[in-house]
Length: 233
Image 1 (spheres, rainbow, N blue to C red):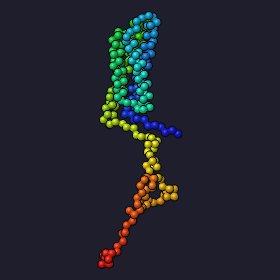
Image 2 (cartoon, rainbow, N blue to C red):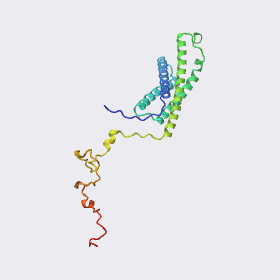
Image 3 (cartoon, rainbow, N blue to C red):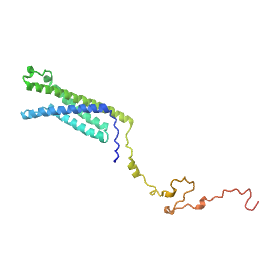
């Protein structure tokens, strides 16, 4: 069975990381759905499309794309906090502009109660409620993206203070890199000598290396013959 590859460890805390990403995803999906609904009806009735709606649709789709890309990176090779800081920083800027335009453009609608006295019929009441839902989830998208950007900055600083990550070498790659003894000119011991204790006798290199140690180098006379010289004195 194939061995699972190691993945770069993540510094993100599990619960805050996934809670914030879930809030970003839910808010983006709802805002994008409402924007598609409004823009389709406005285009069908030949009205001019508001820039606020186009901007909110664009940032919600970009948020969904960013979340999909980063979760794949997080699962496969580890999410880089530096990359996530840049992505959430850009998304936060667009969310802030879109939410500010929405709050300014629909302030009159949001300040009224959704009833027949203000909206005349059921269709008007439905539109009023959709506007308020759009405002609530646009606010959630802005706040969750802001919190995610703050978390990215915190994780990036902590990861930087701990040093740089270097992936360890796989065992298979290490074995492939290590050269066998035969390449280094050292032949393995014969099978009948396996398990025997190590011998302190010097090893004589074979002629394959082009050099042989003379055996006379290891012949020494270590006996004691008394205090006389070779003339018998």
